[in-house]
Image (cartoon, rainbow, N blue to C red; front, side, top):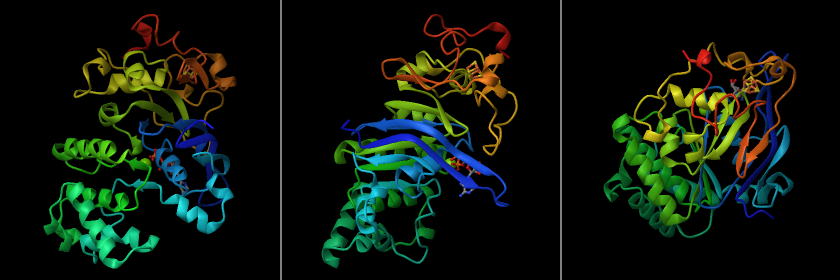
Amino acid sequence: MSGAIVTVEDLRIHFPTQDRRETVKAVDGISFSVQPGETFGVIGESGSGKSTLGRAVVCLLKPTGGRVLHGDIDPYALPAAALRQRRRAFQIIFQDPNASLNPRMSMLDSIREPLDIAGGGSRAERDAIALEMLERVGLSADFAGRYPHELSGGQKQRINIARVLTVRPRLIVCDEVVAALDVSIRADILNLFADLQRDFGLTYLFITHDLGVVSHVSSRIAVMYLGRFMELGTAEDLAERPLHPYTQALLSAEPIPLPAAMRRDRRIILQGEIPSPTDPPSGCRFRTRCPYAQEICATSDPTWREAAPGRFVACHFAGDVTGHPVTNQPHKEAIA
Ligand SMILES: Nc1ncnc2c1ncn2[C@@H]1O[C@H](COP(=O)(O)OP(=O)(O)O)[C@@H](O)[C@H]1O
Ligand code: SF4
Ligand SMILES: [Mg+2]
């Protein structure tokens, strides 16, 4: 037993396309584990499979291949009632603050709803827990009787956080939780997540396309591209010594306000769009956009290897082409 809260082993989530002729390989062979109390960040462009991964981690999607362990238990090996019970400890919050809120339910009823579904305790006890959580997310008791249309996006997201807290989760998947909010209030919500993590001993899987967000909250970061992880390491390692060309391109494209160590002097412009997950490129799936691609990249799929303790990467030339850890500069001809 590893002591991990979640262990993901060679996970694959495939969907049939609408005409059922092809397969969307949204997640296509990912392995990692999340340790208690950490914030594990997943960064990647839209369409790279982040939300699919997050939903699989909380058992909203059944693996096509591989498995997700909660602790050392495979939830899908449990009887249905035990699976439901187990799932409560693994919650998810979505980008759209309205997604989980019924417009006709008061905020108190919305916050209490997961407890009503779980059962147990009297109505008064469940109301008391809901009120406590309302306060814990920084909203006064006045909000208990209000309805979603009376709240701002940030306030609604606070209600969503209170909802999942009622069932005392161990891990929360945060899927682009600040992306729909005004830039001015994002920091407040991120700080709230940090406070709650400390108070409740929470573990987060923090999914975002925004490097500025993930770099502020995460202890480790995985870089995802077309259904796979390209690189995984501590936030500091990735910032200072990105080993994978895709990580380096993401970092270089990021304007302020990245922490100083994460800023790059020169931009690496990625050519073209992310390819279709129904037909990922042969060999390395990043090769169609990689400034360093060689012949071998088209024929051989780079293995996911531990380049240094705790530091994983999938690139035939990682470190050589990005210059890390040897130097800080990539090849000049590859820089736009
Ligand atoms: N239920 C589904 N049926 C078919 N395709 C899906 C489904 N969910 C996601 N996809 C596809 O899987 C890919 C990854 O999607 P998603 O996980 O939402 O990526 P991200 O969250 O990184 O933007 C996309 O091409 C998306 O269209
Ligand atoms: S394996 Fe080749 S194409 Fe893929 S990231 Fe490394 S250098 Fe680029
Ligand atoms: Mg998504």
